[in-house]
Length: 70
Image 1 (cartoon, rainbow, N blue to C red):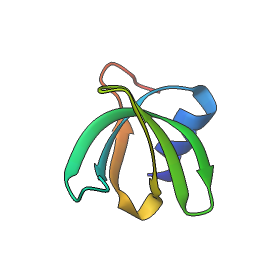
Image 2: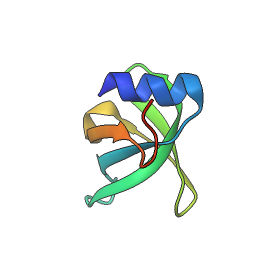
Image 3: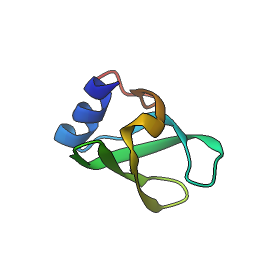
Image 4: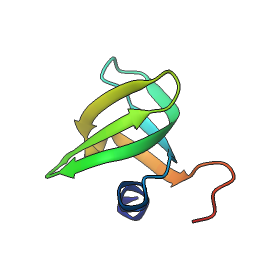
């Protein structure tokens, strides 16, 4: 998973992420990683536009976004 997070961060590309949202719901979103600091990651979620900082442990899965093959 860290490979996809670094790919997004270094290339400014959206990835598909399944995460545990702070409200307790599991969400699948397309997001761009803006920063990784320690055990935290800051994401820019594409739709609806939103910035979110959460622990990396709350990310359940990461993959290329549709149409992107790296």
